[in-house]
Length: 271
Ligand code: SF4
Ligand code: SF4
Image 1 (cartoon, rainbow, N blue to C red):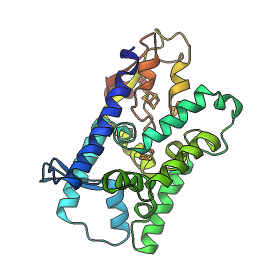
Image 2: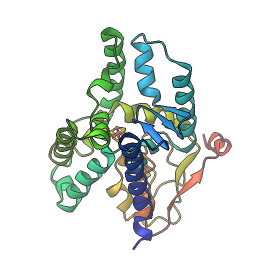
Image 3: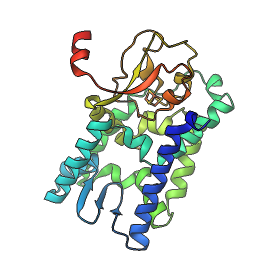
């Protein structure tokens, strides 16, 4: 039973622990992790900065401090190594909300009623581009200004404020309007990390020999388009849109999906 949810338990533990550490840093002055998801300080001296937030600031005309640039470098290298969208499924608090909507959708068969999705998943790349254009013309970090991620995170750490509203809106939107609506279609931060994840070292690999085509993995995957190879080819999930949530690995009873270290040489030979 625990094996079936091992990664989910780890993800939730990490998400809640990080929120607690941020809260403790703010409320009680703990120095382990202070700040917010856009910019924080680890152990009181290691800067960690969201590269997308920094990019918006740069486009808006701000001069970036050396601390901020070091923080961007650390976070970029970290997510390039483990998979950019690991931020989404292992850190971002919105993921808990979108997973909850997804779960209810599956349980009540909403996905069978709404077979066709009314919007393209590429919309998020347009929102990303638009946020940079707006940052340039408005002279401020446009997405940071309205980001539900920041609202929910700041709400949890500093007191809810608009955070409740953001939680309810995303939950209902994902539940009734669009499957994986916010994270899979709109969020520009997810789109940004999808682009970074193209180069990541850790990937989910599929073994078509072991696959019995039950399609449970596609059913739970929040980005099921990335699993096009299921029961067809033994190749890794190379799309940066995979969130490394590992739900596909957990639900596969045939051990046909697992994390693997990427073999760039082998990929070249395959093409
Ligand atoms: S897509 Fe955006 S809101 Fe969703 S988990 Fe990723 S960063 Fe958070
Ligand atoms: S392919 Fe697997 S790890 Fe990637 S998003 Fe889908 S369920 Fe999660």
